[in-house]
Length: 127
Image (tube, rainbow, N blue to C red; front, top):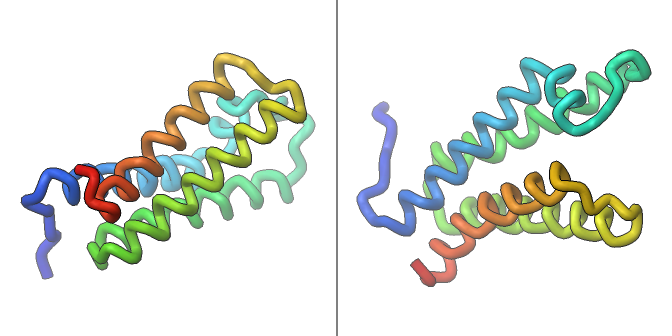
């Protein structure tokens, strides 16, 4: 079995966004303490359940990104885009209600929007 890399520009963008999602998920799965530091948690206060939650969320992103890469179907790309879009919406809601408009939070929001936009743009034919 060989790895399929798309030839169409829109699908290449969706593929790259899926690969980036998988890589970020792998990073969270393998290095949960670094992810917690990056997202402004203090490591000394995290219990083992907190590390498990970060690893679980990372594995979820890894699995979703890999599924999109391996299956390369429009519906899977749509699921990836919608899931990341709702994650971005959740971050935006947090910014509004939790007064969390920080440069770091805005940067993560923009990353989520870009990663969601690639697959959705491909599926809806805007690219």
